[in-house]
Image 1 (cartoon, helix red, strand yellow):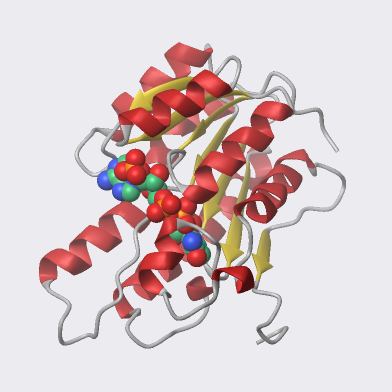
Image 2 (tube, rainbow, N blue to C red):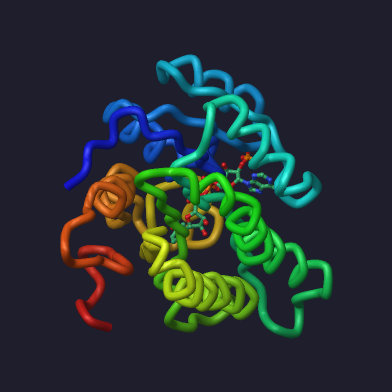
Length: 236
Ligand SMILES: NC(=O)c1ccc[n+]([C@@H]2O[C@H](COP(=O)([O-])OP(=O)(O)OC[C@H]3O[C@@H](n4cnc5c(N)ncnc54)[C@H](OP(=O)(O)O)[C@@H]3O)[C@@H](O)[C@H]2O)c1
C-alpha cells in the first residue's frame, strides 16, 4: 500500500453523488484535489470543506480537455492522478433514442475521459505514483432494457481502459476501472426509481474501492473492481 498524502488528483463529476464521496475520502488521506463540475454552488461548497482542494468549474462537453488538465496541474503544481467520474445516464428505447441523445451520452461517458487521459499523460509521466481510475458501471459488461446507449458508452469506456492499461503498463502508469451497480445518488433516482434506495450501494462504498485501487501498489495489480447491489445475484 502506498501513502496517498500529498497526491495531486483531478476528479471529474465531483459535484455528483459518487464523485463528492471520492473527493471526501481522498482528501481525508491528505490528497490535494481539483474538483470539476458545472454546479458552482456544490463545487465551491465541497472545495471549501476539503483543505487544499480547488473547484474548477467546467462543462466537460464544451470545454477543451487540454485546458482542464493544464489548469488542474497549474493549481496543484503537477498531477499524479485522474479520476474520471462524470457521467450521464439515458433510459430510453432504441427507437426513441435520437442522434443527439446518443452523441450526448457517448461524448460525456466515453469521449471526454479518453481525451482527458490523453491530455493528462505528460503530467502523469512526471509523477512517481501515476494513476487513472475510470468509473464505469456493471453496464460496462451487461445489457439492460432501455440502456442501449448508456451500455454502449460504458462498454466503450471499459474497452479503452483495458487498452490504455496495457499501453501504459511498462511506464508504471496504472489504469483501473470501477464498475458499480446501482448507487444511491441522484442518477440512480432518475434511472431506477423502482429500486428502494435502501437497496442501493452507498457512494462511500464506491469511494472505498477508488481509494483501495490508488493505494494498492504491491507486486500484484488489481485491474478492476466490480461491485453489485447486495440483493442482486453474485457473479451474475
Ligand atoms: N448512481 C449509479 O447508480 C451509478 C451506477 C454505476 C455507475 N455510475 C457512474 O458513476 C458516475 C457518477 O455518477 P453519480 O451517480 O455520482 O451521478 P450524479 O450524482 O448524477 O453525478 C454526475 C456528475 O457528472 C457531472 N456532469 C454531468 N454532465 C457534465 C458535463 N457536461 N460537464 C461536467 N460535468 C458533468 C455532474 O456535474 P454537475 O451536476 O455539476 O453538472 C455530476 O458531478 C457516472 O459515470 C455514472 O455513470 C453510477
